[in-house]
Image (cartoon, rainbow, N blue to C red; front, side, top):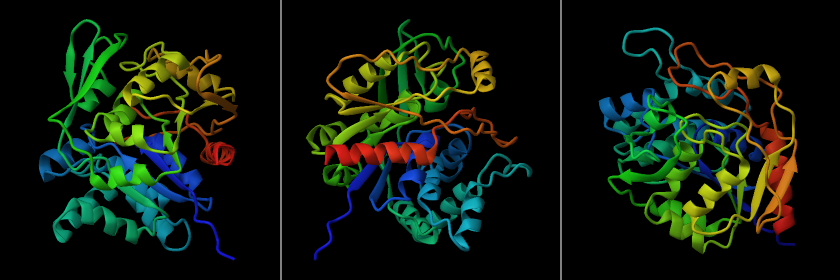
Length: 334
């Protein structure tokens, strides 16, 4: 008897949120692909871009590690790829994985080949695909008319982070990686999020050809709602505000929205409050999309490396719980 082909799940995003989703989904008999934003300009990515002339690698690295084999010797490699140097002039704050891929790009002659070969080294389950191969930067215009260039200045604002973003664009215009468009076309389920709305998720949709590919896909689209608002991006946003922005960027309706129901750590919420960030309020009622509510939060509070200059999430989705919820949507929609 012929076995049916595994369902193809495509995660679109970048950063910690996509890492969490992929790490849970790889435990299931699925074909997995990650389409990753390429406009990051903060932290070690700035040095990768400025000193090596490469596209940013941090989000690519996280997705490769998320999909990697966790058995045997590869477990050591996973730790190495996530290791961030805390000492050393010129190297503190850099990750081993980013330096490895920079070196491999020189050896292989292209960053695309280096990504594929890194996937082989880590024995990944699935594929990791840059959304574009164009070097570009993210720009955001705020309600007071101010325009900010570069992802890290949007993510960690020096301006008034309570202002709403009214427009985002890439400069120069970026063309979709043909492999990304092909992957979207073949998907059975597309997962967008979790992740920072304007700096991890929307930059993928701003790449020429991606929005059109998503509008033409037969796959169901799931949006995983963030747990917390983000100062500088989604100040005081409720769930409906996130979805309004996402659907406008997509140019089509979302099919499912996944919302957490687990209580959040009071200790962590108090820390977020000091930075004008609060839990995202679930104000969703009747709508065209289906809302799936489930306990999705990890019980762990995350601590970053002392050499990491960027702000990181304390509260995150639980990989296993998120994967279970996504697989239940897959069964429901098949």
